Length: 119
Image: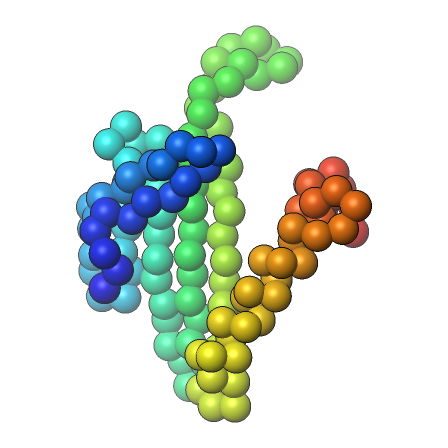
């Protein structure tokens, strides 16, 4: 089990999310104000194990059409499918590290370009 609480730092602000639920292979963490959530889970099948790390953040914003304030949610998640044999944890750590580096390279961060609808 991961340490409690889990903390994510976004734009220099540390967000603490204590464990609020743990059942079977799924744990949920939530900030005191409820605006930030983290889900960590895994499922196993005959051929692989699928890991999910999902961060969600809520905000209240004016709808550009109606001008009414609405709660909106953004989510960022990583799914890892690991076969039961042939690709070990150490290799997957290297692959994930490579992906993180790739997202933060290029003329302008690649992730910013993707969010600008480039593909």
